[in-house]
Image (cartoon, rainbow, N blue to C red; front, side, top):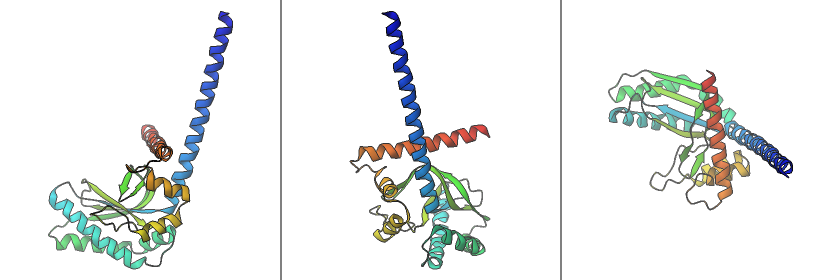
Length: 224
């Protein structure tokens, strides 16, 4: 009897372990697929202030406004992230010039650096759209020491303009985003991190992506 009981416990343990491995593989594959789709579809703008002082934070927003206005003027007829990134790189010197002139006009003399690359971002909510933690292609503009709080948006599809009072991304921008990513991914970033969403399953998926992407970043950092 004791032998049968031990065999039963062993069998249940093996099944449990196999189920956990299966669940882990499914979750990691899903996380990779969604993260890759989002990373391939969006181009983010990331601006780091010189410091957290009130003056430096206000300056950051002024640089942001001028950069966005210029980028919006040169990407009116762009329909892919690749084209947006190409045009941004072609106009790198103009971005620097705009940022430096804005800084100078406001009485500062900070230097400006621009980096194009793939950067890790924590989960961020912009209006009623949330992008899960992960690595995304981005234009990173660093003002001075770039030690202050940062500001971000999605430059393509154009989500950089939002109704601050309502926190709602314009319908035209959301339509372009919906046309860029898969239907499931759009539903995920529209509802996965929303307090108003009643879809518990999609919230679980969103949290899984957060967890595994954060875990991957921690593992990579520990290896360094």
